[in-house]
Image (cartoon, rainbow, N blue to C red; front, side, top):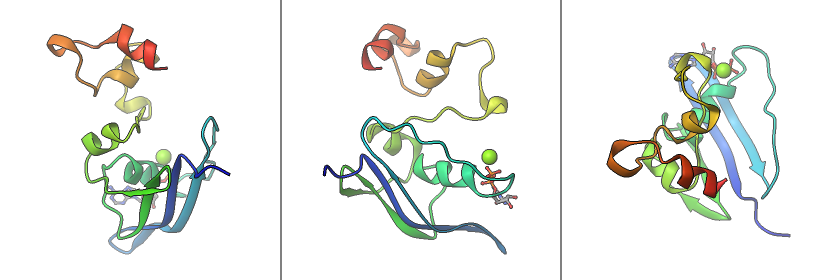
Length: 121
Ligand SMILES: Nc1ncnc2c1ncn2[C@@H]1O[C@H](COP(=O)(O)OP(=O)(O)O)[C@@H](O)[C@H]1O
Ligand SMILES: [Mg+2]
């Protein structure tokens, strides 16, 4: 069996006294579409922010195709092939879904590279 495309192991992240993620394991296989369900405040956004490098976890590790990676910024995440579409209040409403996906990825002359992004889908 191939290694998972993305693996998070034992991710723990606290904000002061609030433990948003406690020893969370998550694994995504190539081609898999995974829904992460949980009540408000369950820690879904925190976990995705850890994966995207917005937060440093207090403990745990992230592996891409079985290789441990250090994701300490969104740029690291993008370089590892991890994109993020934020919740509605972080989206640019005038842009399409594709454009919102590409907004953090520099295109030519500071413009969104729609054709290049479509080709990578
Ligand atoms: N930046 C933050 N500062 C302090 N507490 C936070 C922060 N982000 C999330 N939390 C807290 O962590 C817990 C998990 O939140 P969150 O990951 O947003 O849950 P979900 O996305 O599942 O609704 C909640 O108790 C929330 O209040
Ligand atoms: Mg959320």
